Image (cartoon, rainbow, N blue to C red; front, side, top):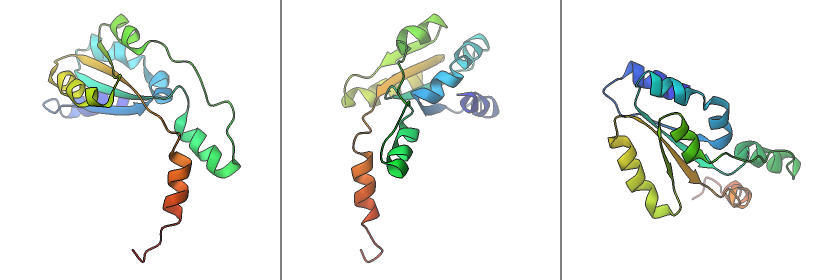
Length: 135
């Protein structure tokens, strides 16, 4: 999120969309206050899986199992609103694009929580690993 703020400051006329997982968001969520206070409009899209998804995937690949990567998220909509930002929650795939359009059209700070399911990552990785350059 802090990089999104930097991009917006460097390119004030650009629409800025910062995309991150919920773990990274929670580590930097205090920047919502900075963006609202300084009136720096941007949109933050959070891939929400209640865990460190990339770390889990790497552990599963390298160790065959994962440990201590799950956590509980706050209500991101209420959390965003508590700072004076707009909060949105995606409940179905067809809501994502209209919500992004609404948030990007706003002149304020918008936070979008979007649930994701990474359960197919390992099988997809295994399938991709079987591909070769003869295709």
